[in-house]
Image 1 (cartoon, rainbow, N blue to C red):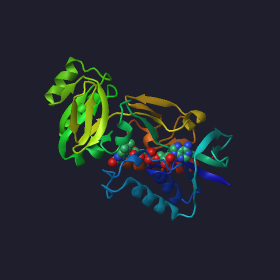
Image 2: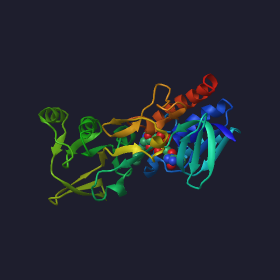
Image 3: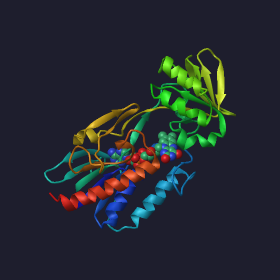
Image 4: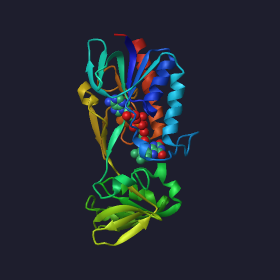
Length: 299
Ligand SMILES: Cc1cc2nc3c(=O)[nH]c(=O)nc-3n(C[C@H](O)[C@H](O)[C@H](O)COP(=O)(O)OP(=O)(O)OC[C@H]3O[C@@H](n4cnc5c(N)ncnc54)[C@H](O)[C@@H]3O)c2cc1C
């Protein structure tokens, strides 16, 4: 069977794109490996109508809505290879299964590489976060820290005093210049340039232990993981990438089409800094644009 569109990634962006294709009565294949980026967090914030719900429940509701449409095929699995054919695309799953479609929508999200500090992985999404808008409010104005992973730490540290009394641990990853220091000081941010040895859980939230042995307890830590598109389908298909201060993402135009005609991308994979509502919005754009590209550019 030749699908109208094959959506790689069945989370917020992919489900949203597939929903709009299904509502246009098109044959859509969704292939999903089931490894959402926010799987470490117990609650997701900032999505209208779902604020504070477990992120897996939100994705499951979206999938249930999508599967009510008879033209949708869902396959649990991971796409390992993708090729451009003459007038279509072919994807191959790790299982070996092959599928072809007239369009591809890349919605596979990103991977996060955390700074190399002992204990950080165990606290990711549960005390250590990337986004104050998503998780800052729940820290209830307690002390907070920025663990620098690069120059983007300045941006986060400037914002963070709106969520709590802030210490910026530069940890050898970011050296504020005089202008940075003046701006951070004006915002009330304390700058600590000593090395951080480890993070661990404690009664207040997270204990930050320095190489010197001294420690500070905070309600939450914010860091800036380096992000990159999950997997290498983007390069297999030849899509252009671009860089942001926190990592690479797929270049798309206003309709979410990549530099490869017929390949669309949406959600975190195709923007510098993503969120659930932005992924859903991107999915709407990619889904409708994918449909219209089939109508207006059938060949
Ligand atoms: C700890 C943490 C907490 C967060 N909290 C919030 C929050 O409170 N609010 C908020 O708005 N945002 C939050 N985010 C951001 C949010 O998780 C992302 O913006 C959102 O998940 C992006 O959706 P997506 O559909 O683009 O990608 P994802 O949700 O990451 O989903 C990508 C899907 O594609 C699949 N996939 C990847 N490659 C393949 C392949 N080759 N074949 C098949 N399937 C594949 C993956 O397995 C996955 O299921 C948080 C992020 C983190 C890390």
